[in-house]
Image (cartoon, rainbow, N blue to C red; front, side, top):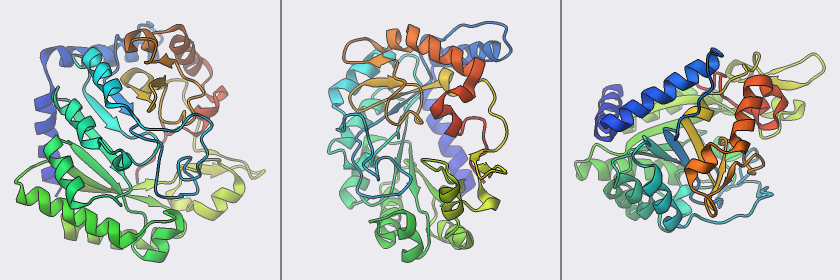
Length: 342
């Protein structure tokens, strides 16, 4: 299982890499290291990865997800493929990959195959995270033929009751059958991709099922599986007591009942060098923790990405992170520098 994951990752990376992309990757890493050591401050022309939001819509009502709660204060909608096409035309010589993450359920986008094909056209890595309810035969075929590199499926319980405690409105059997369907179709089409990963978010109510999750993942033959600590949308004492198991927690409770991330947040952030997030309507934001785009750097509707990425707003945000990261609201609940995988 692990061997297929490693070999597939190496093959996909080899296909993606070029002399220009390799040199750019070294430059991104070096400029970040100099900034971290306070020996220089130079922002690379482009990041290595883009997180792109296909849609804000979701079929579930997960209680600690802004999509599930329908809690957006920004406009909701879905990505126009032409916006992604124009963005990739600009950044593809430097970019390593596109991650169809951020908010919402990507497979609800009616042209998700077209979006992935736009990325595959430039031999870029592509990744998609899904709750797994839409892995129909049609969608599985579309993901494979479009050239998706990696698919992550969340499976946070091994009984219907446990699964639905957090994935409200979900159906465990539908997700499991969808995973098996994708693996079978991939095998029949003799394709190495997408590499399939299962993710289990550990809550108080489901940690006793971790062993069953691992057994099932091995039995169906996914390429990789792992356990993730849960993120609270609002880290309060009540939310911690209801959802967070102490043995699998990224948080700690203070003497007065306050809840915060474990350890001290370092005044630095690798994400601000290696990646940027793009909302469905073209706003460029620092990272996936800016769920309502309150710290946006600019809009692709009016500016090219290169101008936004190195704009005065982006510069001011990075400087603030390196000086006083805990003063920024989204950074206080950010996993950068925090152990999130078990």
